[in-house]
Length: 597
Ligand code: ADP
Image (tube, rainbow, N blue to C red; front, side, top):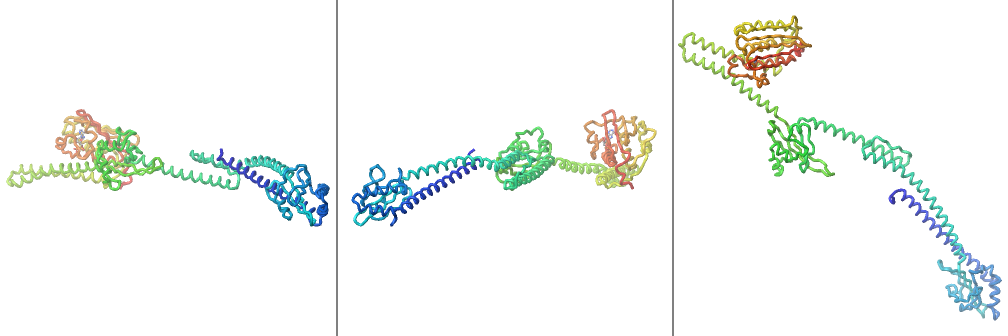
């Protein structure tokens, strides 16, 4: 309350009013006193100057023995002119200042005032001292033989009454003035504080995050300018905040969708931030109270703490490679993180975890592939080596035996050639170097053709091979030769992996833009655990037996790539001992259309 602008303005007005009134009163009363004193001296000077009637009457009275009584009569006669009344008296004294006569009956001690003392010295005493409680006038008179002093003394009571009256009037004026000043100052301070309160309310709203309201500016004065500036400031602040929060949102979106797992910890090891990938990576091990120590413990990388403590952390940043956690291979980057907490800049820790399992698996798959290729080629090479060495060692071998060895070598060479050709096909498919012969073709004709091709082999195993196709199948666009290669491969698998006298059925049907070809056998089947791996390169269910059957283990891998290149899919379901169903779904309009040549 005492600090409010209202109070200050009212106080200033009141103090101002009182000060003005005090000064006015002082000046006025001083003026009245001066005027009164001057009037007093001037009035007496007029009657006591040399040659004045009163003076000469008083001087002539000196010649008489009882001059004092005579002089009293003279002065009494002049009392109106001299202003003699209850407050102003005259005294007739001898030259020693002893009272002889006076206009007052009061015969008390006559004080020797400076003016009276001057008159006793023969000078006229007219000096008036400011602040003294009287005014007086002393004139020495002499006729040569006799001297006296006429002394006029005024108690100033009259003047004091006047001064008091002036003071009372001024006091009344002061009171009225004060009331007016207080009212005016209230109005003025209201006029000043209303816009300020308006701005204060606006500032409070901004502090609460409400930027939408604009303050109304009622005037063009400084406060109006302040209001406009405030509005400008609030819109700039809003834009800046929008920008900052936009940036923050962007960062948070990036942070949350980042594939790398990110965890930030405070200086005392509490979790500061964690993104979705990190929560997913830690799985059940994660909870909101996860600490930095617990995190190190989970990933079994507690030695990191020693790095940090010993300052071996390469300026606050280092990478741990191939950390294994929960069957995953991880690269972990650990660094320092500056953040603000309790208005202070602090330094925490940030961990960025990159899941390298896929790369790891790929490396592993490549190593396995190289091992597989070497293994697959070693077997026929060993056979060829054995056959040719035997031929060289026994040049006299009989013709039948030699033919046997030579046939064996040729067979193994063919087997190697098949592997190499298949690998080449796969490599071209992988590198998109395959030359596709895209054309419109009749799938039904293709199916009839493959059944004819496989008829001999099928008959050799006493299988019954049946083809079930609708009257008409829509024509397709694609590489007919390669699709035929895929179908032959799958059909020959059915023939190979079905014990003699089995039943094989090839069927096709058309559904919404797709043609599905199924090859069903009642052969040995495939164990459920092998099904997901069938399309891997060189994967065979029973290595020894199937390679004996002349398979390379690459057929299904190639089939999958060719069908995928056409925009189709291949699916195998099987039950051990009951048989296998391979379904190929192909779009009528192949993806390869653009490459038609
Ligand atoms: P391969 O040239 O050795 O036949 P594939 O890639 O064509 O290689 O087949 C992979 C493996 O899948 C085969 O070795 C075989 O074990 C299994 N397989 C494929 N088709 C059948 C089927 N119709 N019945 C049983 N097993 C099959």
